[in-house]
Image 1 (cartoon, rainbow, N blue to C red):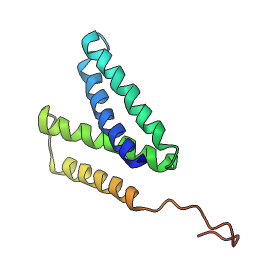
Image 2 (cartoon, helix red, strand yellow):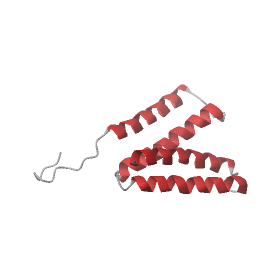
Image 3 (cartoon, helix red, strand yellow):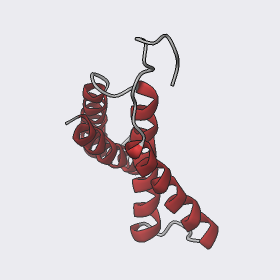
Image 4 (cartoon, rainbow, N blue to C red):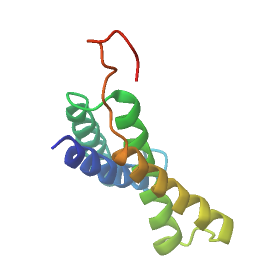
Length: 116
């Protein structure tokens, strides 16, 4: 369930990141209010994941999903510049995020006194 919360939090991060852009420096209250709500909800979801996942993995995935989603929406829908190097880097970013999900976060075996 932690990974579900983490993905939801990352998606909500995209929403508040875009909201910051549209808020015009926090001057448009009709954008600021939903942006702050998305911010609170995204960090709530992130905090829920920390009960299960290590902060290093969770934070990397959380911010990575936010960066990936924001870059994707910016390039696909908002007219942000698109270039081959930028696309390669964004694909590499999501590949690394998936890699973090696949890595087992198991503590060292303390029964034998050794490290794995």
